[in-house]
Amino acid sequence: MGRDLPDGRTGRDCVTDHADRLAFIRANTTLRPVPHAPEIALHVADEAVPLWSKTEEELAQAGLPPPFWAFAWAGGQALARYVLDHPQSVAGRAALDVGSGSGLVAIAAMKAGAASVTAADPDPFARAAMMLNAQANGVAVTPEAEDPIGAAPRGFKVVLVGDLFYERDLAARLIDWLERCAASGAEILVGDPGRSYLPRERLQAVAEYAVPVTRELEDSEIKRTTVWRLARSGG
Image (cartoon, rainbow, N blue to C red):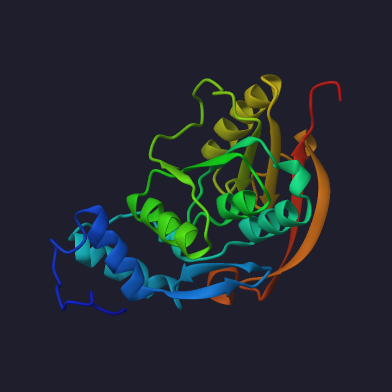
């Protein structure tokens, strides 16, 4: 079920603030290079279900979201690889990483020369993880708790989306909002390994990768993963 916090504390009061979340993440993950983007190291978990169960136990709260932040998902790995290999896609520009999770894509963007990256994720564990991961990689990202999907575009020049088209309602909200962002002048880049609700007809493929993944999460060891650019209306 994972490891306890370093000072031996357990119970519902262990993970109630930012410092405790940082300690929880350090105690239950290992800093490792990302398979498809080894320039970046992340705090990752060995197994998904034990960490998920332990997170719920520490908070004495069932029904928490899965620990998406503790793994390098295929879409994020592919998008990170693309950004690192094509720094002109983000260099000198303000970027928004939506559903950032571990912060992998945000970190890649900063390494590629982005002027700044806002990493949005409503999960406080994810925001703690992305701060730890950014520090481990010598960059700074700005965590944001507010869900930007559906809000008015805020002037970001690049919007990055790694592996978010896995649920019907979310996908519908997301693509409509991304089209609004594109209309306001943002470049939209999406990394996706073929999730069910990816609107391929509204996207243009720009790169494809064979990404190593965790079989426990994907029922596969390699996922063919595509990086897409949003097709502008009439373009």
